[in-house]
Length: 349
Image (cartoon, rainbow, N blue to C red):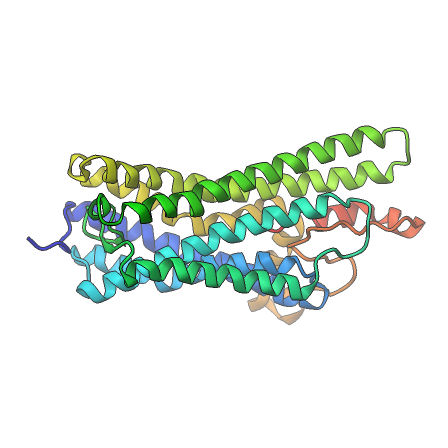
């Protein structure tokens, strides 16, 4: 039996290929726009904002290195390349997946640290620390991606035959310790940390607002800003975890039960849904950040002339990755408070 032959109908294969093509195009365009905006604002980026750039890199990397092969295989009704490309695809998917969830976890911790000092203008996280965090994220993901190659765990084709990932059904006995460790350290623990951090931020904002009711209006404005940042951060985290949760449940079913009891069409859906996680971050930025939306529209005017697409680099055009709120207690600063709040509405991941 050919393990790389599609178990789906030709019509479903073509539909899956078209879906992945759309996801790939949207992911590449969206995350490239995020990186372009970051480059344009690089002179005023703060250290923690590098983590949001790092998150866009993981999503872009997954879309570029994985989706074209998956689309070609779907339209060929057979996985292309055999064992070599299957190993490559499974390793790349696991690598970028772990990097993304750990990046979101670090982002949540950073947001929590920032929220502890709402009124402090001093930078609590240095460039050196953030660069070390980014390096640790990539090294951590690389180590976990190499474990199956070194014998702890295993990569293999998905039940429907058009994708490769961890061979869940083959790890019921030999790789069971890997499965438990992987789910505990790369899904359960990060999810708990993210939930605790954002719950802590919510509590902090509530008590800060309550204690500042009798003071000047500057503190409530800062709280209002951080509340909007919190909403976006939570949406990004929930989007990623929500995309991968169905796939995780199907994978656990394959381990504790017989994967052959799941119809190929059913096992296909969680896999396709998980791959859409690379699209959501730029989409959330575009919906909730007026400054990001405005600059994207300015870039669309490139064919109309240079002046139409030029993005201003003035003090009021703030980064789309803002995690801190520097609201100066001067009359001039208060007069432009609305501009500051609008341009800083997108948080780190």
